[in-house]
Image (cartoon, rainbow, N blue to C red; front, top):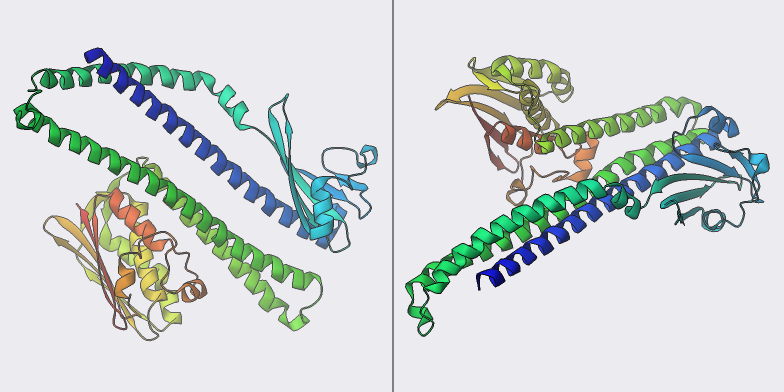
Length: 439
């Protein structure tokens, strides 16, 4: 019986391990494939705008890295190619992605090389003069990735096999010993059975919790990727639309500064969003950051000075009081906590309102409190405001320049310091957020 239990446990462990590796490896591959496709399409949009604006000279003077760009005339003749002499290239009018671009304005195709285990993605876009610009990028297939990583994969499998065998052996021995003492005629009355039953239930419960955690992690990753793509695409489309109006002379001369300012604002919004995403990624990795003695009151004074102009524009009074509390922590993350809390308190405040910052010590913990007289947060939204990209009022958030990541950064920075956050808010009366940090 011991051998049978051992084989079953070992087989189950190996199946779970192999399935997990397949799902994780395949998931990451397809995730990065989607990222590369989005990047390629963005590069195509930028190249198309450049050609519309500056003509073929734009292609000649631009380095597209590993991407290949081809310009095709309405008759299918290759006018320019970044990787080959256009004069020696055959007519491209019948290429799948080119035909789609001629007919529908945009086209896409993928071509595989079985011998080299490579695939090439092609994206094409029709231009105003009837020509088509195409961008392509060659990458390795999933099979090539697996072959290239076969040595580390085999090493992991061997180590996992050994560990699984050891654990299966121990577990089978621990199970067989009490089973051998079972009263098979009256199992329900047997004390050993009663001892095993809670253990098996706990194991089953832990398995269910692991499955739920894995599912939630997958959903969060997909949702985060979709949100990032949407948030970056929106300002980029706005910039391109404004540039197209300027390019076609549809803007009055006196209105050009207004449109240029709009482009600058949208670009600044993209930069802010990318910086916030980078900060969150750094916190997610769990890497250790340099710690030092941080004087919270001094950081609060620096934040107040940085946000003073923004407060004055809304006629908001920015107040600060507190004690000279010192903690051991990451200075940059402490600055992020105070800056984002105060920045939100100003953005969602009322004209003529106040923002109160307070630094104090309580039960050997540092306490940071930011209280405003703003619009408040509805009860149904209070449990979600620290989630990534969550906005109570999306139109108001975007008008104020918010990315939807500020409070998420605050939450991760507080967790990094093993701290806690408390939120108290009432619609129409304001919000108070308190952060507790171990000293």
